View (cartoon, rainbow, N blue to C red):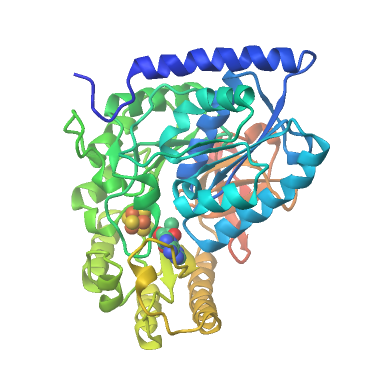
Length: 477
Ligand code: 5AD
Ligand code: SF4
């Protein structure tokens, strides 16, 4: 029996028919050269993975792609709702399109992603941005062909962002953007309802892809020559719940690890409450799995953790970190932290600082709390000023910089296996890649090395980046 949370093949076929119709319309409208689409994705890697599917669909419908909205016939912003700052940037960039539209009345402006799943955002777009042609939510990405057809033929604005469970669309075309690295979503949505977070509201309930679908896509990625697969989900540790298959996340990692090929596996994000010893052992035992764990703590204070609904205590988190470090030698740990959760005091914030000192993360993603309409935390009193929170933020950043500097200094003289991702952004004569622990490293080398693994010995360090020299191939054997 087909799984309830997969979109039925008939519906996907219906969309393919719409894609053909759109192709037909576009070939008449643009007879000499393909129309150009500019797709810009904000936010997390999950959104980036959606963007790659959107581009796959647009390509199927006959679009080519360009790097700026000025030259585009279709501009699509795939939006993020996780913090106010991300939303403000979207509104700012959409506002700028008004002028382009004056010069090019046929320009199609489309908005999708997490922001569009919120009614108050859709209302604002509808009222204040009348030149937006198409708005679609996160659950109907696969219906882009039908929605674009309506936009091109109906002469009206099209808005489609239903609530709902959020089904999985398999077999969508993908236009991958990561070069030697590929994103592979293994699950969607989130059931955790951390009180600050909008994700469970805009991405709906947690649902996992069946292992056979994940493995099929992993094989495709490897066959296409990608050397690093990052498995994506809001909480990969609870992968598999509700599936036909019994396979859990550790089992899935083992299956992907067993696929033939020269590639590495990363994954994110792991919720600490669901991180098992079995998973840690799997990381230790699987040669293709990077020894890196992104384990967001959010706060080091028990009262704040409770108010966030994180469902672990400071001590439980520290015990987990101790187990992780003991089970996976050389493990690199990274984390997300929210500074200034409503009602957090400076003393409580100090518990976060002391936890960061204890754990010694490789790197941290630190955010000042941003109230999200509709979440429980947005209703809490929030007496600390933004200015004060900014000071706390700077304090934590300085502590982490000190830890990272010490850690980075210890790397000098060590040799790392590095996947060469491309040229350095700051010095085109150098190559850039990441160590297994996800630290950026740059070194001199020829571009043929891009997409290969090199052994690199660290000679110098920057603030966040290592610099080194590639060892000759024979040294590494
Ligand atoms: N304010 C600030 N940071 C947030 N995050 C999620 N929601 C918010 C919010 N409302 C952060 C968390 C999460 C990361 C992806 O974004 O740290 O782990
Ligand atoms: Fe948001 Fe918490 Fe779910 Fe992460 S686990 S997406 S922080 S609700």
